[in-house]
Length: 225
Image 1: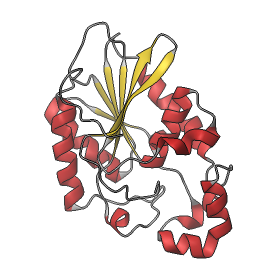
Image 2 (image 1 turned 30 degrees about the horizontal axis):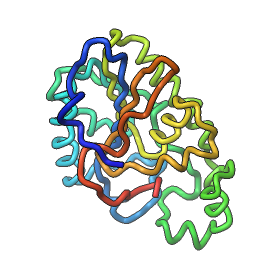
Image 3 (image 1 turned 180 degrees about the vertical axis):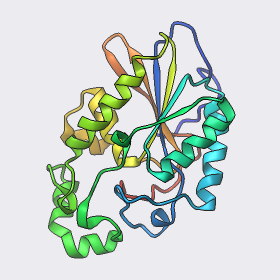
Image 4 (image 1 turned 30 degrees about the vertical axis):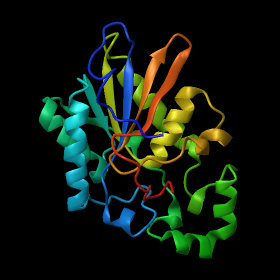
């Protein structure tokens, strides 16, 4: 589901609880080429920078209190656009990097299927797979979710944290914070470039309020397709 951030509920609402916005970086050339990026440090395209600027205008209207970002350039550049509008300092944390995927990194979608078809199929079935000899999805959540929670703890009671990261890392972090079993994380679906998901603090923990928000539906390009 894609839901825009404008309208009812936008901005600061006293007493609504803390909120986490998990924002995926803008487009890179490897996204367009359908190359698996993983932890490879690929920069934004000009289109990606434009996406970040447009999305930043929407997110700035939500009145964020803090920004934390992956230290990879595609995420850091995206975060910088929001920082420029809000005056907030960006904290960079390598714990928010995309999944390290070993020999898969740099390969196209077609090359991965051709060379590692059984491994790819097992991953899509929800089995714990070290794609390309890299990280398990649960290991990504183990490093990323605590980063988010540490920064949430610094927020005021109705504060908003913007987390700028990557499609796979965001999905695993959402799954972990919602308490879903890892086998079901794939059901959350991917994020389009520069779209975001919103988690709200509820009486029984975190709730998914929006997913793949920020634009009309677009193809999901990247590692999480």
